[in-house]
Image (cartoon, rainbow, N blue to C red; front, side, top):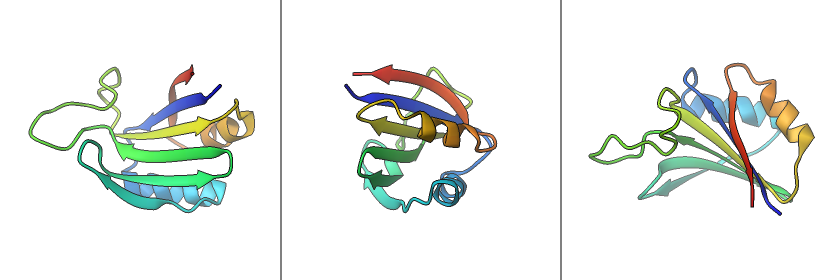
Length: 105
């Protein structure tokens, strides 16, 4: 089983959110670039992957990565092999970061 959570903010830029999450969780993010997603930031720890990315997809279109949340400018995505309530609680305590959805695969 894989546990996925999506958070969002319309207050922070991707860089600001990287700094906040880094300080809050003690993680180091690496900046990456994708043709589809644009510039995003990735932090990996043994049993979790956290990504921070803009919601608007780069390019000519006005497409959103999460179109169901059009006011969200920045997304934070978590992937863990099992539910991680400690991680979720720590992310929930970050100002202006809202839990958007949860899924398992």
